[in-house]
Image 1 (cartoon, helix red, strand yellow):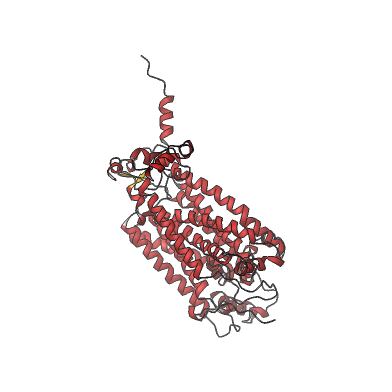
Image 2 (cartoon, rainbow over the protein chains, first blue to last red):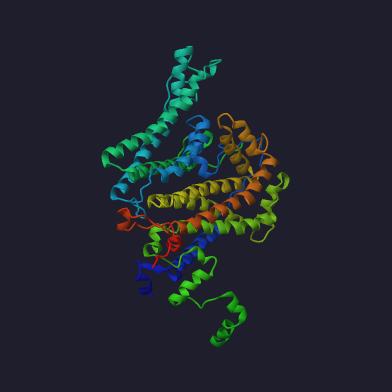
Length: 255
Length: 268
């Protein structure tokens, strides 16, 4: 049996030791998806109607993290620049962390595991706080239905420069104000979170390049998970925050 | 019965298909891998830790399985689906009512598509945390990032095809994001929608991407991905201590042999 495989470098024959696992796992997946397909039907709503916008209109679940970002910043930032930067950043990882040590070991070191856990918690605290602040922050002079950091700053700036707290009443507003509130402030926050994270793991754990990468990658995974979960389970009518059990199917106004 | 089986196994036809006996001996366990195009994706032997489920969780293989199921169910769906605005929705609806196993295969396609997105993402997470992107596997990691992108695009293009409210509004929201690109936003939006709105033109464009272009891209990238796994030294393993001390790593055993042969033979 296995003796033959153990002789050199502790290797085992692919047949049967790997192919049998592959076969069993493949059958389990097939069984799972067969059962799911028998009992759960894929959604099929009414015939497409460009005149009737469902509320809320949501992208597929894996893009709901990006759609969540859209609520907090300029669409070019949320829909193009952030996902583009994430893909480029992911592809760059092996060209930044170039040492071979630590290959093949989960988290490389016990510190690596702690850093990953810390990074998840750190990201969760930041992002959940920011989402809540953006939903509930309101200044008394802000126009009805406006809320969040960007709109609050926008109100303060228009008040200072144009004498009215309502940005919608200002004609020919300088492009500087929306640039600050929709692009610059969100960019600073999105860069500040990972930057502080790197400072902390360098200070506390004397993190090397691999461990800094673990911190940053965990920040990405945690962000993806948190934003996707909030975007799919906690956003209901008009993309406002709800508890998951309050979020019903999208409404379609009657014609 | 046993004798009949022996007779079959000794026929020319059987011997022309299977070149080795059932793999119960080291020799046949080696030959079965070398002789089979599909098993040939694997080496003959792998490190013991590679068969531990808790190392890889089988996520890459499971992603491939999803792709295979999606190909089979997808081709089958193409028999019935009509990519034209007046018919698309009703041809999908007909799967529920008129076609044997129609709803089952559509469900299978939908759920495994979600499964593939999830599994590909988890596979990336596994590869990262085991440090399997480190040299010499840098380029294969980049190929993997591209496969993640193609997986997202495959799923997203398929989302439009049922032509229901979920489909066109998800795609309207999604393409609007692309339309927010600085400077060339309008052109991008026009390119994505093949027009100013989500219409028949969009449907044909996304259908073509979904059934031909993106699957072929995925297959091409997968070929490179799987080939490079082998060329980069197989499944990632902890590095032996003497290599960690700085000894150069041979790129490939074949190259080592070739370099040996290139050296002039010692004279006299």
